[in-house]
Length: 375
Figure 1 (spheres, helix red, strand yellow):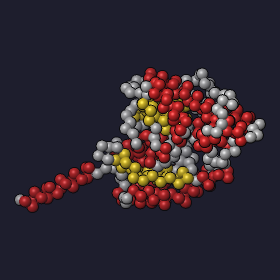
Figure 2 (cartoon, helix red, strand yellow):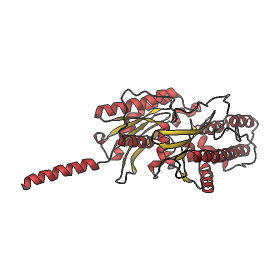
Figure 3 (cartoon, one colour):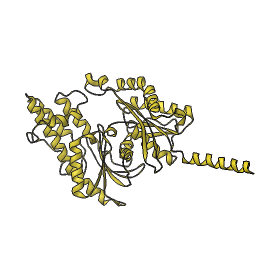
Figure 4 (spheres, helix red, strand yellow):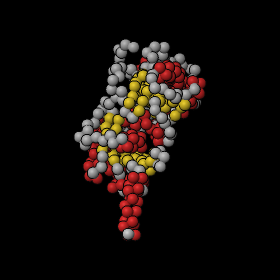
């Protein structure tokens, strides 16, 4: 009898251990020019724990061209992807057989780059017979603050990166309502192109803030396209054109610093005005219980923009949430974060899931990108 009871207790113990095992997710990101892999899990309270987050940049590969060359980026991904994933697994202290699911970026992005990480993720998932999860890169940014913050739905999201600038109501995992977007250039693109016009080496966008600290923000009066119309839609192409014209007459370093400072100030003014409009639009939506404002994407690392938006949130009684600086740019921890959320809901994908160079978070939103858009 004692032996029988002992066997029952052992079985129950095994069941308890299995039930209490927390998911271990491998995330892979290769949408543009970062080769990245990450392992995350969660604690007893259900909060994510980043066990490793490896990001390999390709700055030196693309520097001489002043921007990302897709074919070179894809080749670099192919050369690095295996040891980047291996390093992420090693640093996590886990084994590949411990992984419960593999999440790879499937879009949007450069298709030749997406295909590398997507194919590698599928191969791993298939080889260890574990679920595969295709992740929208933008959803990775949208959920990136969850890596260090308790975040409840719904919330207002400002996604500002090299390829995207959008205001979205995030109603839940996979549930997005776009309130505004750029009708031409993304904000990160405007930063990068302005930096290039000022003679700053690629990637120059983050250096604008550094140059701006040395200049007079009131030296140049720059245009603010659709500033007083178009709801919370954004436009930066006209601003970039104005910068181009001014740089042709710049002769001194001081003038360069002044133009960088004037550009930074103009961006802050545009985002201040448009974010206030987005607040109003968000509050009109159904189901808004708490005023939460999340800012994510590469440009969210800009300290001046952060400070301005935090001040605006205090003014309008919003709770402001930003991901840590290391999770603002492209990374695999945010991809694994989406993978973790989907794993818990058993939202898996087939191994023939395609790469999507265009993949909107709000599939029903009107297409506004391009010149000649009427607002």
